[in-house]
Length: 381
Image (cartoon, rainbow, N blue to C red; front, side):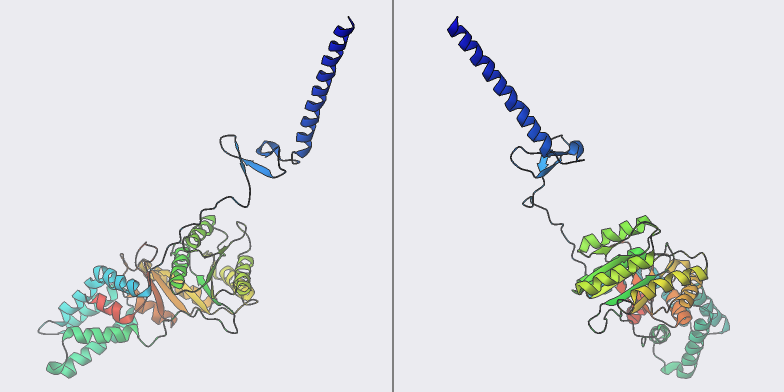
């Protein structure tokens, strides 16, 4: 009996020790679980590092050593290839104007009816009344005075069209700041003209020129615009400064300029809201954006984006924006489609500033510097 009692006491003792050990382990696990972590954060038995639960219910340790895949950055096209495509696209869509004018000027007899037809052809191309009258007068004078000694109708027309487009205008983008500050490009225009897309495409042009760029998504009233700009930036490795939806656009613009200054970037591009309810509201908004940016660095370029297919509606928009901000350059989008090439002449005359860039399609690099000679050659086929 004594031996049996001893064995019973031994078994009871082992059971108690086992129970105590289990209770101790459970208490330790509970104490090591992060507060408020819920079911998504677990604790490994051999470390205090949190884990993030994966979709299958397992756990993946969040450690600094975890491999990360770098996004593949796109290599934007250079200026030369853009200009080649500019000529090809324009010659395919705009040459009807040139062919019509050449057919009229090549007639054996240039009577009043012919000159009226020439004038009507130019007006239908959205060139505008005053530029059309000027061009017709120049053509009439040269064809009458030079007569048989005149160059071919094509050469005469080419020279006069180039003069009308004005090759003396400075079409360079002003992207260089002073005193070590970045260049600041403010991009304005109504929604629907392709403003946000244009900002993204300009960033690609600058990246191709080895410039470092910051994008400011100050069109805070359209979440789609902010997301769209973020995508453009990701594709070429350009940082995008964004704020809260419906937040203060000026605040975003300020932070973008500050990031460019602090980071030593070359250029900051700021996309602005394109709402056009009334001129006073637009003036207040854009004026504030410009003022707060210039607390960090002066604005070096204000680009107005216009949809080339809108014709006279585009001219009305151009007038409003020129009264609100000091526009220094024009970007014409959608010039490859149903747009009439004369809008280039009309908008330059209206604002007194040059067309600097033209959009030729929906591709990421379908934005090219505007060259008067290439444009006129495309018109003439």
